[in-house]
Image 1 (cartoon, one colour):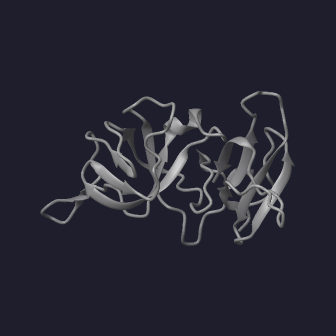
Image 2 (cartoon, rainbow, N blue to C red):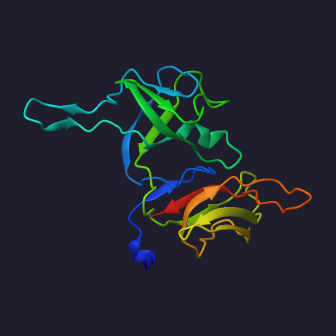
Length: 198
């Protein structure tokens, strides 16, 4: 697959996650939580269940198991200044989703209202993304490292990436990584404000 600048049709902020690919990029649902419960997304204004009328027509697409939820409030609080991500494990009712991780609440964000977006998962034959690293919070143009899973499934640490630089590498995931141990080097992503172009 050849990707060039004319191939980009969308962009999405990157949530660092060792298990979840960069989703979407089209937003399938969005809103604001009305209460916060561990491992759940609760929004009493939502319509998460699919609705089919008497003629068999889908009148509300709803959301599906396996789709990816972004907590957008985390963009102000995470070390990478990006959202947090979790997979939808179950649709409990029209207003409640069971999630694979406890991304609501985010520490430092408002107590009950946190914005979210829901995207299609990007698992089977994942779309490749080109990523761009933003400036760090200090705004001092410091180079950083990015730990990615390439479209071919290889884990690669790209070191010394300058703010504003776009990697010449097609990736499916940007990972948190891990600190150095006595037997292995650090693979930690230290970049901030990462954007994926898809």
